Length: 267
Length: 352
Image 1 (tube, one colour):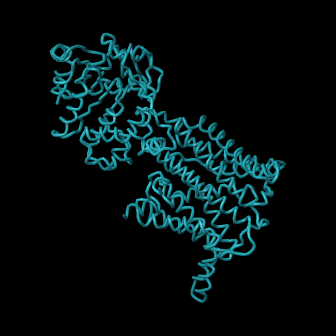
Image 2 (cartoon, chains in turn brown, yellow; image 1 turned 30 degrees about the horizontal axis):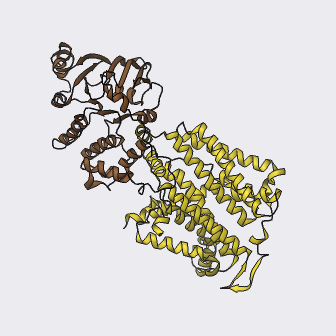
Image 3 (cartoon, chains in turn orange, purple; image 1 turned 120 degrees about the horizontal axis):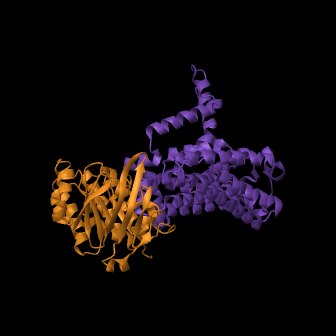
């Protein structure tokens, strides 16, 4: 089984951004949801993307992971233009995403959900005549990840029977199973209870720890951002309002005014 | 061993396992357990419809694709064999060539339909399959020079598969050991192999992608699967299996015609069988096809018996008159959907 979408070579070159958007713009009718956003994201860096509701954070994510097509501008991954590529191709090339609104396969079990992600990474979706449960590695790898996010106690339960918190964990588990070069988390702790959220944040911190992955995180909780982020990008009305290290951005006028000042979404 | 043959897809219900075993044994020994032309016809029909319904379940139950072109693929396999026998002669190579040509045509047509319409919304695919299947049925009845039109085709199959061949003189449990028996076992074992193959496919990594697409195609795409390719592949596999079922039907009947293999009624029957048995289970196809074909063949007999038994009572004899069998089939269908919304198999698995 050949592994696809590895980006080990670019990962070493820390100076060059792994993922880049150039003048990325999308219009819905007359409304410009994302307006010429140019940003580069390096491997080994965790960037928090913040901004008030409607600032275009999720739309920006959709443009990067391929759910929404850009009106103008480009998306580059490891220097290659992927603006025209569909969502499946982008995932295969190494952009993985966890969704804000839980978006899983409800009638399949936890293990099957994770196995689908493992199988996608290994590119064996067109294996027709062998049992999925038999393929060495597939099941083991899936079980391994399920245990890592502590969902092993419910591994044979259908996803539709899981609690909201467990579904969020499964979202993260599937992203880990894809093991992409770029990890995109869209509010991974939204709607989670106080004792469940830290577990998910620990998982993200663990991914960040070895400094090889490029991680994008949309998050509202400022304490989370302070502890995890290497860099903060503030979106406001679809534009980049501020971009820099957390300490600097948090203090900047634009954030004080546009974001914190109004007390919007500050948990 | 058995679990391996079933691709690890256990019935997951003792009652279901029992019923499936009973059906398998009955079909395997049908010529000896139920001697008689009519019961053998029914058994062969059950075998063939199990494959046809299972191949439809791959589309509807596993991938979530609604297609109305399944009888077209069934018909392609049947007409392939008929034309092979007609033009190449009554030989096994003619049967094989006909079946292969039919399957090839079915896959090619499925590929074209899929490429053109599986990108768009599901309802359009359903409409397009309906249109193509209707056009195909019209073409078959119009090109009467080739297809025999509405009359269909009668042809000779190899002598080894007809009653003309006698293997051993005499009878075994009331059944003559002749070519007809061989023909039945050709149908039975081919159907068994095709069914196990389909069962294996739905339990493969490919099969789990299909289920993922059924559950949430948006997310399947986001995980990295090109949904359209998988949908097209599923359509092609399903078309090939349906066409092979059609070939078996043609070999068994020694006749093809629009009414027997292409009519829209058969398409509805397939839908009913999938729903009654339980969508997305494969075993549902076995149960659905068996129940439905049995009802089709024996409900009338059963009812005329009941009608005679109740003779003299008010209204009942009329209601139970064997001419009303379709009414009762409809009632049975409504009841089964009402009480088993996820099919017989789903019900049995839940009541475990």
